[in-house]
Length: 288
Image (cartoon, rainbow, N blue to C red; front, side, top):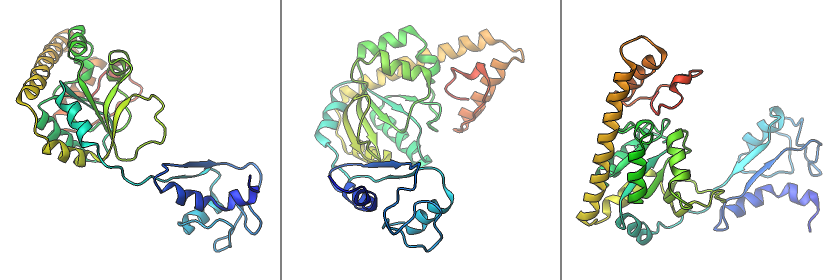
């Protein structure tokens, strides 16, 4: 055991340690009392005042001392891990591939997803907040039992890119149709120390662009590409039919669902996103 003053004064040491191969350490501390070590104050300090905490970003810590009532949170990442080329190649080559895309951080990531989709000739299910506008809307195609049955039979290799999913249909499919393993390949730039769902077979520590370059270097069997293309084209056809049927059902009246659909079509055709809040009609649309 160690004295409490030693633990509190060595936060910078812990952060330094977590930069090594041992993994990410997330320290989130909120003190109700002034528990600073001797020689420094956690609350009420003045700029330039000596603190017992020796941290890399002195100015940031000083600002937090003076102004903030929130916890000072540090997230440090481990060293980059080598990409498991063989495992990724085997998963991609073993059967049909589907890209499931969450929130992307930049247009470059969206371009990388497009490049992967073209290289693999596969289906892309792009979340509402992905910024990656595709011609197949999950809100339409995943509402079809025929599509769900098709995906269930094909048992695709799911490659997850980007951040969290908000689209209800995609989440429902990932949780109920995929079985215990929901993500076969998870591409993430900042790996989590703990995966709550334990649902990834291979976690790839890479950006979307880095992973796209790796996919580009793969030599895939033409049979795999044909299988990917067949599933993609069939689901696109079902999605298009659902779109036409929905349009016929809504008619030309100036209703809230119709306005939402018009805005969705306008936004998706320009590869942009729009959010309409407090509207029940857009609840299940993946582009709004």
